[in-house]
Image 1: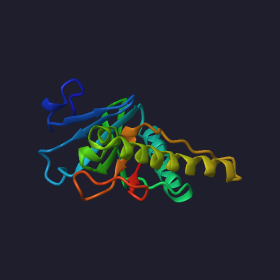
Image 2: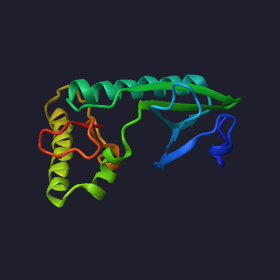
Image 3: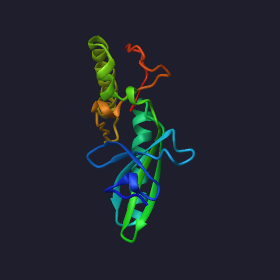
Image 4: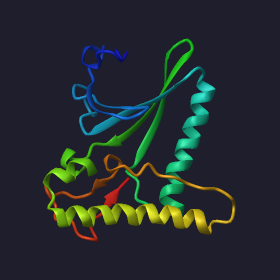
Length: 170
């Protein structure tokens, strides 16, 4: 029941947290149990079979990035929602992280030196994927969208100190 033109006026109101090229990141603050989650509205499909195929591919991708390449991925749940005949929506849900921990926001509060450490930490994760692609013999290659908004610091602190050991999630 999401009104894509006015998510805040939907049957279940949604707050837009961010937009990507093919996604919108939503929060459903009024839904009990959803207040600690972000829901990414991703591509739409014509049939449930197409959406299921995409769901399987997305789950495999997340598994390979984490297990085979060794990049920590924020735990992700995928859902398929038939919206109307000929329109099936694909969603990904992740636990909400503090907004200040999202990579693009880190640039606003971290020192220049910490930003450089953060950049280096992101590039080390990208390098893990590059090494996987170079050394895996089955022809499978992985890719990351490495923009900073896809990375987050994992910490209980509001503004954690950023060191080479600071945990990051993709």
